[in-house]
Amino acid sequence: MMYGYIGSMKTKPGRRDEVVSLLVNGSDDLRSAGCRLYVVSVSDTEADLISVSEVWDSKERHDASRQLPEAKAAMAQARSMLIGDVTRQEVTVAGGLGL
Image 1 (cartoon, helix red, strand yellow):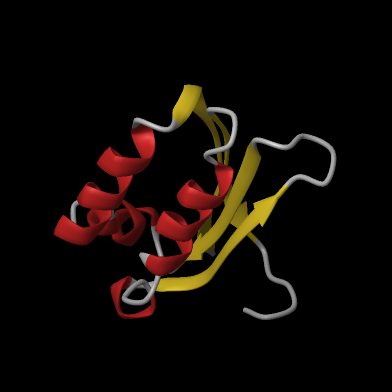
Image 2 (spheres, rainbow, N blue to C red):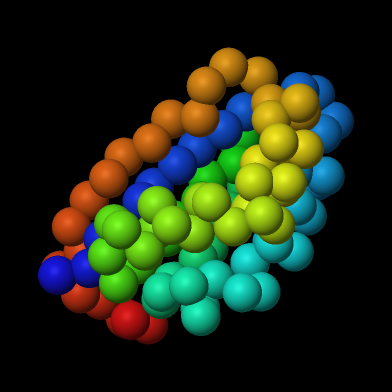
């Protein structure tokens, strides 16, 4: 079974698009790191809420990707634009469309 990660974060007012850009632009090399699905979404009802859904070959590959220099740089830059903690849920992916 594959590893899934679902995260959500709130940005400081007016910073959502900057964080979305960081998250989307930093996704180019994820496939070679073991990522099968990476989706960044914004809320239609909460202006500063972002969600990220990921599916990986394994938790180990996900964890290793967070140590890549470009991932660390993007996370550090985004962190300054966030309010509170990133909520996260780890799941086992059973299957679905697009995988």
